Length: 249
Image 1 (cartoon, one colour):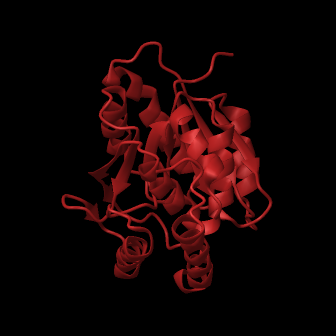
Image 2 (cartoon, rainbow, N blue to C red; image 1 turned 180 degrees about the vertical axis):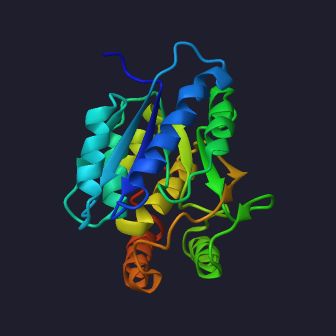
């Protein structure tokens, strides 16, 4: 089979309550996206990167893959968002890749981001929840966590944007070397990916998104703090102190 034009990669963990409906809604959007972009031929795949679920997520993901030829799934075997996202990008076959969040989908991001990429206006497009024009309807603690994380990244790693975690779109071949260079996982993998892409000279562009939460966080925010701080310390050491940026300026 020919490779799809677009791969949508979604890490999933304990999502039995929303997975089926979210994937079906996404497939309906993707079915018309090619016409809206005036792209022919048009094809896509949805890659469900399951990571350590303890509910019926694995079974539902397999049912979706069995029912739809444009859905694939695999399991990493442990609760690790970054590991799942990294494996999903590596497994993706599309020319273009969108990294989605199962609980925070913004269909309009697909159209706007791909238009930018196809026009050559960006190598990586970030859906920012914190920039001017964004409409972040999540609970206040999640909004605050986004801003605190971005502030820490600015201080520690000279990050110049407003958001690193969430919706992303990029040309797969351009970003694969960046993925290979990343050294952290869990929550900080997405941040490292964005920071390294910019340091390597890729054009990273932010666009505002509108997001509403479909369900409470699958992982408690407080429990994530130690992993985030350890990942930030490691990333700061590797990039700023040891300067192991594998070809970055």
